[in-house]
Length: 496
Image (cartoon, rainbow, N blue to C red; front, side):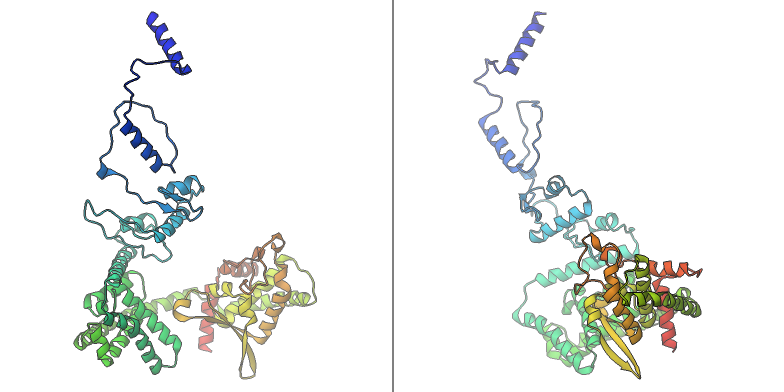
């Protein structure tokens, strides 16, 4: 009992701060350990403070070789210099979404790339993710990234193609960073430019030349340079990557044909080839290999084309039904356009009916993709140029942003004069009556504002749904999309 009372009084003294130990001369921690603790607190100043119970007066230290060598990076959002950037983004900026957090991390790594200690096991070859639109860089386990982030199946064609392309890109980057002689550097700067001038002399179509240069440039980049491209292994690997990635046989043939054009050019410019370390005999061998690969792809291309035609037939609708649908849409839009010209204010449903009728006319007249319709801007509409075909007058607008802009350049939207005048009425009186504009949405008169507006002045994201809803309301049974209209219209235009 007396022991319990003594213990209780000692505890109260400690809590009051009045207890003095007989072992004051022997502190729990030495001065060296206090200094080490202070240094650790400075290193971890950006982390949350965690209070741990003292279990033993002897603190076991990690060996220096196991120290955390994590690099500090600047946060792009607040400018703070932090060591654990992922934790900082989650705790300080409340970025819970993993994709958003990774995007900020990858931007910071671009500014200050990851560096690794030379000690320990053999380094892995870090690779960038080859999937289009993915910003992941310097991945040690690319295969895990493809499985978890892009949901690929191990061993699938897309999985194998991505790994192969990443390997070829890594080889290309290594070759590009290797030191070169002045002669090689001059050749790098001039050979493709000379090749382009050579092509421009042989054809008047600059569009064709740009397509060939883009294809050759991609082949050179994946191979690691012109010298590496003229090896049988690299050329076969390129064809394998294209095939496993889902490219059509005809597309592969186009790339190989562009390669043959480069080979023909190097046979003419033997000095340029020798500067690159490629002999004339090597060029001729690679040209023969390209011809053999094209021969293999030719029957596959015919088979693929037949399959495509059958798929197009399945997606076509009866042209008579499409003509009747067009007539109904025109009949509904005519009085609404007249009311717009008189300055009346229409309901959103009526304005949308006029807009959908004009979209249908665009799809039937030129058979463009739905993305072309959605990306048409006010500046491109106002910059339309007219042309005559016989006695008829047509207005042509160039749309620069669309699916195949990288390989084919801007595409065109063609309006007959009567349809263009109706579109002018919609642009002048109908667009400003779009629902939701009073809520502080962007100015629709801007040069880059979408021509066909959705709710709130935004760009239409689902052209196919707009077409189908109207088609269904008119009593047509089969489901239809903008692709059905495009294929039907394009086939009819081709046969006429």
